[in-house]
Every structure is written in C-alpha cells, then in structure tokens.
Image 1 (tube, chains in turn brown, orange):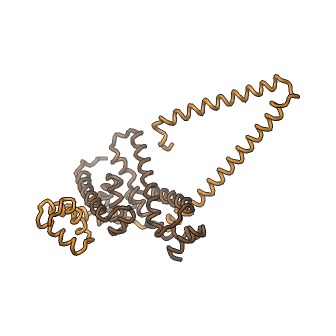
Image 2 (cartoon, each protein chain N blue to C red):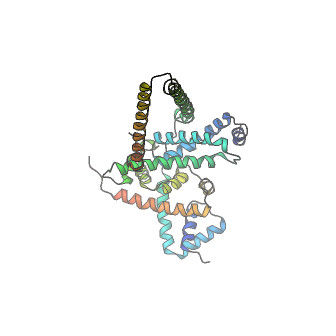
Length: 188
Length: 150
C-alpha cells in the first residue's frame, strides 16, 4: 500500500485500514514535532492521540486530499497550541512567582534529549522560553530537518515568509539563549 | 541592485541554510559585501544555527508509537459506550416519569390530595434543579479556574 491508496481507502471506501496505514507512516514525525513543541513525551503522546482521533473523525467530511501529512499537521498544530494555552492559563491562575516562560521551562524535560550535555540542556531551555510560533518553525527546521518548501507547505505560507520567520526566530533564540546563559544560577 | 533590509535578511537566512538559487546567492553575497549590518546579522545567525544544529532528540520507542493509535480506538469505544449508556438511561427515566404521570397525576380515579402532593413535589424538584443549573451556568461563565485540571 502507498499513501495515495491509503487516502483513497479512507475517503472513498471509508476503510479504517487506510487510516491505520497513514498513522503508521506519519506517527513518528508527528510525535517528534509534538515533543519539539511541548517538551515532553507524555504531552506529545496526548497531543498525537487527540490529533489522530480528530483526524479519524474528520475524514468522512473530506472530499479530496493530495497528501495526508499537511492536512493532519493543521490538526496536530492546533492540539499542541491548545495544550500550550491550557498550561499558560494554569500558570496564570496559580499566580506563580516565576514568569510564564519559566513555567514553560518546567514542562520541557531534558530526558528527551539524546545527549545530556550542558550545552544541549541550555538550547532546550532556550527553546522552552521562546514563543510557540518561533519554536514551531525552529522545530520544523532543526528537529525534523525540513527544507523551506516543506515548511512552507506545512504552514501554508510563502517560501519568503519562511525565510523571514526563520531569521526572526533565530534572532529571538540568540537573545533568549544569552539571557538564560547570563542569568544567575539558582543555588540548591 | 537595490535590496531592502527585509529582503537582505531573507537572503542571508537562505544563504546560511543553503536554500538559495544561483541568482539569489549572488544577491545575498552582494548584501553581505555592501552592508556591515548584514554581516553582523549573518554572524549572529550562524552562531545561533551552530547551537541549534547540535540539538538531537531521542527516537521514540516502539511501544510509545504503538499507543498513539491504539488508545484512540479505546477512546472511541469508551465515548460510544458512555453515550449509549447515558442515552438509554435518560430514555428509561423519561419513560418512567411519563408512565408515572399518566398513572397517578392524570388518573381521575385517584384521590385529588395525593395527586396534588405528587405534582407539588415534582414541581419543587424541577424548580430546585432549574435554580442550581442556572447558578452553575452563571458561575461557569466567570469562573477563572475552569481550565485548571483538578
């Protein structure tokens, strides 16, 4: 089976076997993206489960589909943003003394990093403290290793806008990295 | 060639990622040659790029990936079961109320006092239910803590 056949099975024949094939094909990249956005495996798994369930429920209403992942990505993205918004509301209401960005860093577990070096932890903390929009484009570029055309296709924006957003996301990364790196360390 | 600052920023980003066409590459190099600010920003981008390129996440384990779709099946089954159970129970309760009303309230053979008492009790229960529901809905609208999972 290939992607085209699986999509046809889902849309034309309403056969769940097609959807299972699509899930198997794209679950890894969906999960990796969700980890990049949410910072830990548990939330990423929740977001992916929710997204696949929503996609499965929405498929009967879809008339045509060229590629599965760009369509699914919109659902996954919304699920991740909803989770982030919920976290922010919780942080606001519990009136932590920390800033929201510090609260977000709590959710970013370094256990998902392949190498546990100090520099990698710092990069991970920096990503945690950035806005969702900046983190999203950096995750697509660095965690998933996508090229500009793929990013433009997934986000539904022109290639020039991808370049612009990457420029500003990297600038924001540099500033946040310096701020965190120069912040006084907490002593236990 | 006259390129504005925003275009320069796009071009040097593309140059760093090796994503430019030959023509765009020439324009990007021209930007770098002409503008000191562009060169500074390019250096900054390159430094950020070097740090971000080191980031590698662990590959997810197979059992984690397997759960991503197995669980939704469970969720669908759970939701379907819940709605079936709730719907059937509601239908049963409504049927019971209807039968009770027909047998007692609207049965002229029954004495008037018990019929009025039952009607009063039912009206009282409905009134309490309505009041609680209205209060809950009003509170929910302005509840600052409704998004917090307990």
